[in-house]
Length: 274
Image (cartoon, rainbow, N blue to C red; front, side):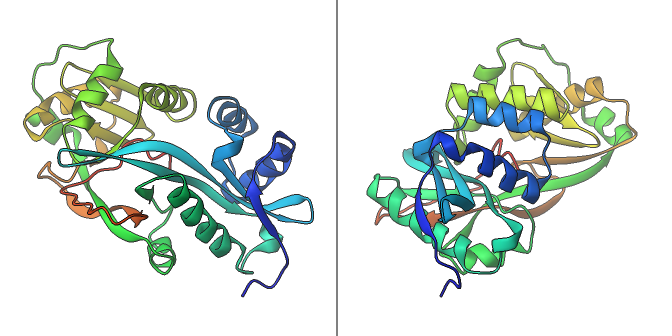
């Protein structure tokens, strides 16, 4: 049982200063990043807070998305930036907030809640609260020479959204609408690094890590795009698990909210905003 009294509700605009403070204390993001999120993605009705007195002690954000499962498209929420004020941690508040989120999303007719734990240790935490491993990805540490050997000719495109939607909608996994993808692209460019797209592939790059999105047969285009973005001698790549390189690892979790069967194959979470 929680050891402190609190009330769970949806957020109000007046909560924003406390939400920013809790976020900053938990994740260390800059004021510029928080300005960007709260201006572009914050929605009171999709933000849950647990208040001690009148102030939010913990919070989580629910971002609407679709989940492709074979020929089906399900309505889901992506659980993002769950955070507790440091002085209220380990008192059962976040567990209660997650339970409330399950109830609310079910009442709203959602099929599932999807999340990508921020660290390997959190997989067990969420498993104890009704989530199961459902997504995978591959991670590959690769030299510049290996990428040069694999690269294939590319025709770059300015229509990045169409490329992303084509690549992502062709496989099982989390799918974002155009507004969410536009936000993710701008967020990456402003705060993380650069990106590039060809007619069949997309690469985002930051520091020495890159996300590659393509079909297995078009991976050579990702290699060429990445070589054009950076002159590093070695890269750490993540990409969907149907591309047969690197090491397979957990790539996200799913909490089922309905009786509908959800069958996922090589499912991938794109733009998880870790």
